[in-house]
Picture (spheres, rainbow, N blue to C red):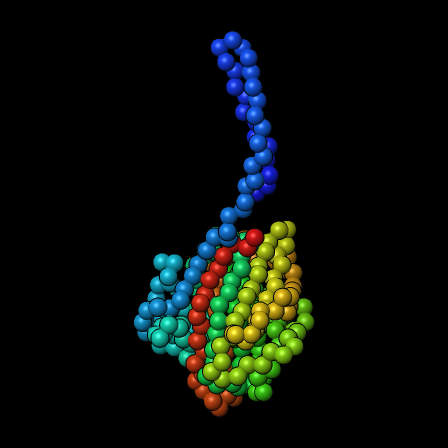
Length: 239
């Protein structure tokens, strides 16, 4: 355990005389351990294959809509289509997940999401709803559609085609689970504060689970399919 400790050593000689030396020792907490990582430095079709961590991705949706090439993991999102890519179960209930995404088209009502935790068939999903003008609303959902609190509109965040955006999702469980998230344009300063923070006590989600990524296009989308790509995925144990 990190902290400063007092260590004493007492030496006794053959005549029974003793001497004691005392020293303070400071123990520093180790850096958060990497639990999962992927930089997509491979080439695959019909799936995402095996991550840098040695664990395989599980995809949900038509296999041909998933591929890895040119250093990114790609969703080819069709109109009226939802796609998911899941990690294996992460051996922690306090994690920070970070990464980046890019879209090649911006459409009204499209979603880009990060699964903070999935246990069985339920999940917490941090979802960015992107409007035709690129403005964003963030929400935390339980399952696919139950809102945990109201959506928020991060000031100054606008998504444009071809631009890379960063995200960070913090998920910490004590007696309940706190979920916090922020999104920002790559190259800009990372926001110092979380843009959305929510708490949920759903019993089925308080244990360890997988994490993942999500994309969706409404059925009326004209500019489809959309190439939604992800990179620099990392999950670490939250301090």
